[in-house]
Length: 122
Image 1 (cartoon, rainbow, N blue to C red):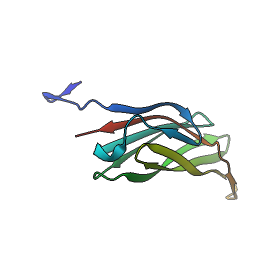
Image 2 (image 1 turned 180 degrees about the vertical axis):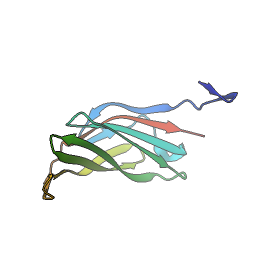
Image 3 (image 1 turned 90 degrees about the vertical axis):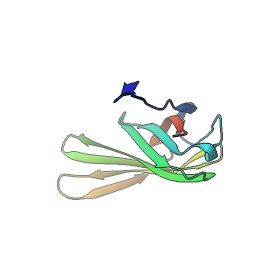
Image 4 (image 1 turned 135 degrees about the vertical axis):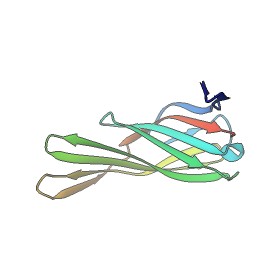
């Protein structure tokens, strides 16, 4: 794609699929300056995180989704770590905030699914 007479950088797809726990990437993240992580919650809401990497072998991030269900609000989260070529999801949960102000927090190991990881050298 061209914007303002410049080509946008093309991503290297490091992972494509669907995991709720861990996955092996096609390449190490160490040579990428930016990493984009895409996911989806069990409620079908999309999530995205972009991490700027300074030639590090390990990065950490969080995916967050939010939705309204009836009169309640829901927020799903999942922390992740990528170390070289290994993605690991951890600390997944969902918070339900009711219209009366009460909140319910549930932990679940399958709240979020990672669907794609891209690396950029720019």
